[in-house]
Image (cartoon, helix red, strand yellow):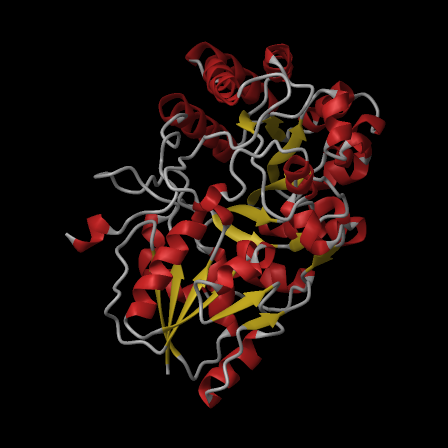
Length: 446
């Protein structure tokens, strides 16, 4: 028995290659690989960097689906099904939209795969494959098996992805993760995480975790265990981590060089609208940011625009805020309304969705606004995101922030990453804009 695993690409402009700027190793495939029994032969195609062999001799095709890759995933599935192959789909988009995914697959896995993949494979072998398998929120594996993409490793960025936890205890309305995990957080055993880190070839790590601070006891145990490894790592956190001085110091001592913080907005009304008003209760925002910087940890600040109180003044204030704190880097993104979130349902009820299934819409391209903002037109929102992002990545801004960073930390890896990322953003910040979601496969047939 042979299984073919597929990671779909997002899409590409006609005649161009897929954009590979952020080509991270596909950890999802390594986790899936370790869940498949050794008795199965398996192969893997990374659609971002290679052509898929639709003529491959295989028994079962697994495709992992994100919202941005859904259209492409469905096209790939159709090619395999035309050839009589059985296709199974899973991933967060399938979990959010199982009825939709069932139209394009022979079976779908809803939720986390650990508890259901065994039953699915057994049913397939017995000829009794069901249409839907539903797993519960969990994180049930020891070590991911990266051998599935060992021959492609040199094409990925030299950063090892290690999953530490899933879920988050907050309940932000635009977040699809909060909806699935019902504002709960689950984590792996620290011993398993440390064992995995020791098997990785790189010394720079991104810990895949939506909120590693959700369980303080776990975070403290993990940080203590990381200290002897002398690695450099980054992850996502919420700003409230700066309220705990000891935890912040321990993070730095364990090798943390940067954290990604989703500020989302500096407007109190917007934060209340997205059910993130709790950030206003943390104390003085400036003070918490300064505490993080003071211990030598940099911040990748992420902002989302398009909520009801946003106008051009919001963009100006946000840019000033970013320059004031000299952030390592910053994201100025328009709101992307994911299916099955509270924000999606609210905007739909108000008749503000321009497209209810933008991920399947013909002609949809990356960066297109699919809803009607309150104070801006969709085109204005898109233009302001681009303009103020460009301002942040001007060379003058990069040079100033680079000098500040050097005073903050002497870490070779963090300073190298700063210049690589910021210069790349200066030149490529808009390359994703205009990329079509999905692909008509015509380039592959030539």
